[in-house]
Image (cartoon, rainbow, N blue to C red; front, side, top):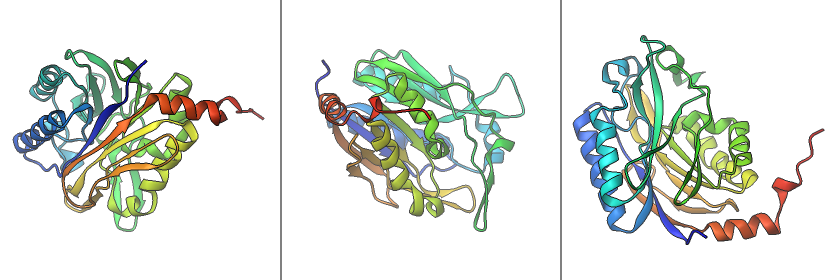
Length: 271
């Protein structure tokens, strides 16, 4: 039986200065741990958030300095730490990078890695981007048994594809981590409703750590990092524009009770 514990989503305003971004992330991780968090989640592309065309120049390897720092922090503060996501050099396609999220355990061990499956390729009047020109899409789901429960991973644009979350739930997911750099344009309309929908339909906790501020030259991120419970209640929400930390208690016993009282996952019928 896993006792209730405190989770933290870190909201950053990452830019193009990698050393500054890493310093800010480290300071917030230490603060979150000092306030009792056992599970900490960073946002998408937290070490470098600039123009997509520059991702390759700022990519690292799995034994690079950023992930080594995250490993050290997870070990030092005995955290389950989701290192948001970052650009990792692709060996299969050297012209592109992987948008990878790495989940560390409290002994610094890698519990799972996830490469973003759905690239953000959109053509709205005021938001145009083709992530797939620079990022090689992943093809495998990721979830892991951790000291804090069964944790699944997704990244940003994946939020629009409910089949990912249902498959993870079928694998036993209790908590879903979603690092993001969700845009303000789409976020105002869809961020909250999609997060709450994924939580409700799968009866899982959603911990969504978003970026705020500018993404590259012209895209503003939405902020509003959230922790949502399996009933769809927003337990914590960050500011739209300011970096910071939000906290909420994760109670897997309450989740089990809800799934017992409202066994919708058992009532599925395939036509």
